[in-house]
Length: 100
Image 1 (cartoon, one colour):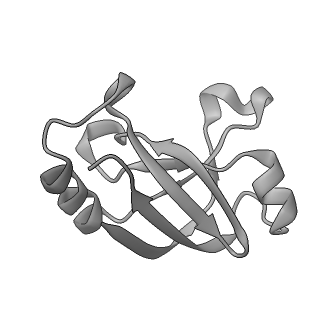
Image 2: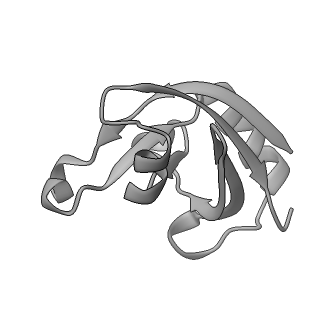
């Protein structure tokens, strides 16, 4: 399953000093992912994915959002630097589920 979407980068306030930055997948697509993945989940309910932003691709995991909302995708500093992105920017993101 492949999901392409635009999302706004946001910082996790609880870990602001560590610069944890995420983008939230849309709720409709997140629900489809839950259906497709079924019981295939790893620690913290995560799912392995290949993510692409601009010309940068990497393997990582998406995590369930709080309150059952959209999954969240962490964007490491090297990705943000390579793509000239910062908190508040909107990025086009491709997420491909692995192991499903």
